[in-house]
Length: 272
Image (cartoon, rainbow, N blue to C red; front, side, top):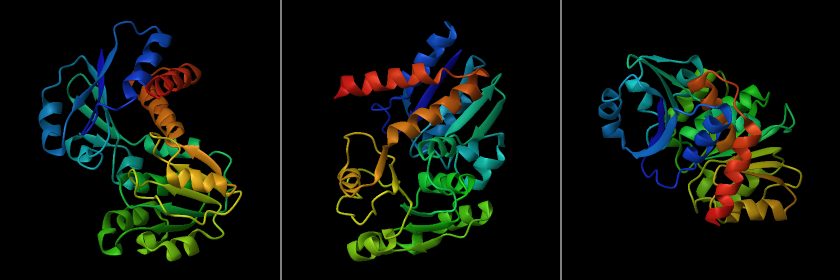
């Protein structure tokens, strides 16, 4: 059987390390996982060309929203989020879209106080998944900092489908407004691309901070938060657990989490 991660760019992806280590530990000797460069325009063509030997696809940026368009059916969670990072394939006919980013964020934020206050930085697909994760964790007081509220339509639609009511503000580019929004937060999740959160400060001590980036690490944002006394979690934790959920969806087997974590840590150390 075959599986792969698709995206653009994708050469840096650690998904092959995670999935391949799981296959080896599970004794799936005939399973292979690789990476393919693919943009939004090419996704439908790529999927249409797959044979019955394909078990599934992991989808990274910029494919998470267009994935819904090539699916034959979509999980309720992916529908609510408005994005999918997984296509489970069956016999070349069924293309089931799902979202395991939510599980990744939930596991990364384990230990965060339920009923607390959360701040999310960014409005993209990962921010949409974060809203769903915060709902699952019992956190309903949510502020989202974005560059422009006029461009946050997808995020608002996700919030409506999830039944959550975040405060969405365009204070992301204003350090003073960002600090004010971060004051008193219990959970902070940065979904911003590399460098975009540099200079943002004001995370309170004791807060749980997830920065979805993981290379290079620590980011300037993560380092500042840790120096302020926050408990910082890197994007590797989210990456691990979204892959764990994908392996289960694609193979139907219980993933070897410890083996996958060791393989991930070794790969990161080798790159460093």
